[in-house]
Length: 122
Image 1 (cartoon, rainbow, N blue to C red):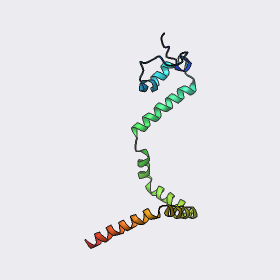
Image 2: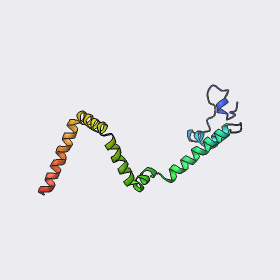
Image 3: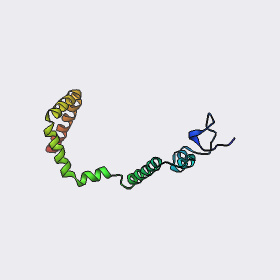
Image 4: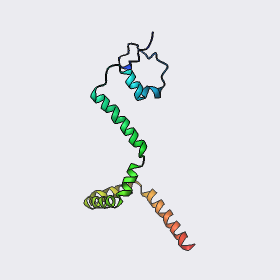
């Protein structure tokens, strides 16, 4: 028996096609090949969007970092304003965090002070 490459409507209980690797099976070309019916508008848009996003991500992998660098002053101002508006929340969060990690924070503080003392002495 021969595979008809229509995995969504396969009549075999288990796949008999051993020719495709996992990478080939997940590629868009195989998706088009498997679907013997014409693609709907939504399916075409979904494939286009997936390819468009992949292309944009590969073109600009540092988008978030570049955005922050360009808008650094605005982001700092926005974060500062949020902290002022939510002062109670920020203080409660910091107190809770300090209580959970008290020993670790004290150890780091001691190490930092020791390094500063060495630098000032040396």
